[in-house]
Amino acid sequence: MIGQRLHAVLDEDRVVDDLRRYFGIGLPPGAGVFTGGRFEHFAGGGDRRQVANRFTAEDLIAVQTLSVTVPASVSLDLLEGSLGAQLSHLLRAIPVDTDLSDADASVVADGSPAHQAWCLLENQYKVGWVIAGKLLARKRPRLLPVYDRVVRCALGRPPSFWTELRTALRENDGTLHHRLLDLRQSAGLPNTVSPLRIADVAVWMAHPAPGHRCP
Image (cartoon, rainbow, N blue to C red; front, side):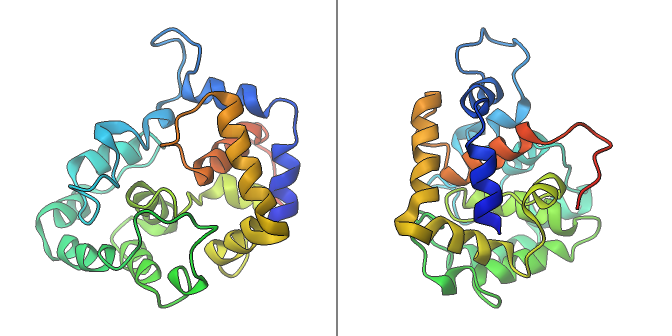
């Protein structure tokens, strides 16, 4: 189901133009560029070697480009407290240089370090599932997708979004994954924009106007 819905979005004639507009390709500086286009690139990215296994103040700013804010108390705990220490321990067990399409199913299964990290974040004060997912997508952009209300509306509510998306990306010899790579190239985006973000942005840009009722 996720694969079919995502293919439908990616087959729209507008998708390359949407990607270029979102990331500001070919536009002059400041010409209505979406702040989310800086999510993976701000301060060099959340998965660069020096910071891949710990949350930084730059990560907290980066998720704000996706229209969410981590509560101050949680931010401080991430940066200076036991929450940050626990998540650093879990992050060390989550692959950095692996695409979701190539990952073993156990990497994103319930009970995995990635799932434990998501649960730990999701249960923090005023964090919830949307912010938890965006924080982890910042740290592992190739492996863990953004999953928010827009994506849920467009692609559905499977028991495990990560697992279902992984399956969709691998079907038919990775047709969907390769389609995302082709779109990245056609839009002129750098390789630092992961296939998962191509999918996320394509869905977000194609989403109906506010007021649309999700199925």
